[in-house]
Figure 1 (cartoon, rainbow over the protein chains, first blue to last red):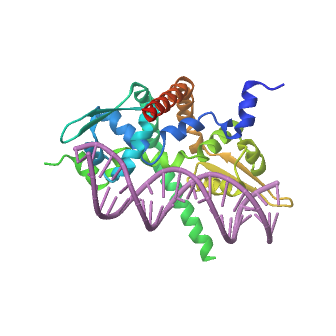
Figure 2: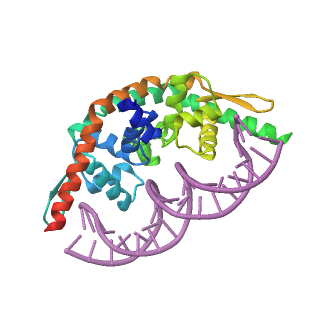
Figure 3: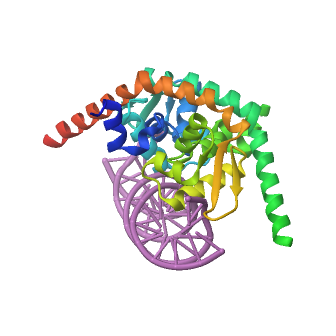
Length: 132
Length: 132
DNA sequence: CTGAATCCGAAACGATACTG
DNA sequence: CAGTATCGTTTCGGATTCAG
């Protein structure tokens, strides 16, 4: 006999990792910076968000915002008129991620340098191996 | 006049989000499940890790493990012989992520369903709009 | 058994031009 | 202002085959 959990794992084996889905939803090159920025700044217009993110293109910003809106993490409010005006803000659900972000920021503060060091050491060993 | 923070943001705009780098390092389709599994299970051989992850291919497993090893998050120990035997385990640095994972798992327990619901609602509205 | 090598397709990302 | 439309590039993951 199968338990529910076993059935779930057998049909989708990769979900032996319970945080797989949330990783897909929250973490990518641009989803995280967008959520972070909206969480920090409250409501922002499209153009202002674009400027704060620095190097994002309008297409990618639109695509990413659509996904976040679809997943209920971001709220979009359109104020028709000329010129058009659209406000984006984080939703309650999105704001519930702030603890996650906080823990990640703390980890980063204490450990990102160690990763960088590990990387440098690895390259070093790589070079040493190539010289032989 | 520019504040220090503005100058910093202007020189590397995308790093207005302080957790960008750690996201790149830790979260992807397979890095997270691998770290999770090694964190749970201690030391595992290549093949056993492969089986636990379910649907990963050897190439992707190798590639991902190399990156994690390079970044100091995973330790690789080779026991030469025939047949070959290689053990992978999480490093101390990798283990320091367990708090992050824990927080994420808790968030997922309480909120993943809400994301799914939001997605369903969004599709619903999409269909309604198409019918008009 | 542990991968390396190769090829492939999909998806994410990016540059540019244009529109209501 | 806030996108859309197009297109090209890059990256990631996946399938298969082969080798030490």
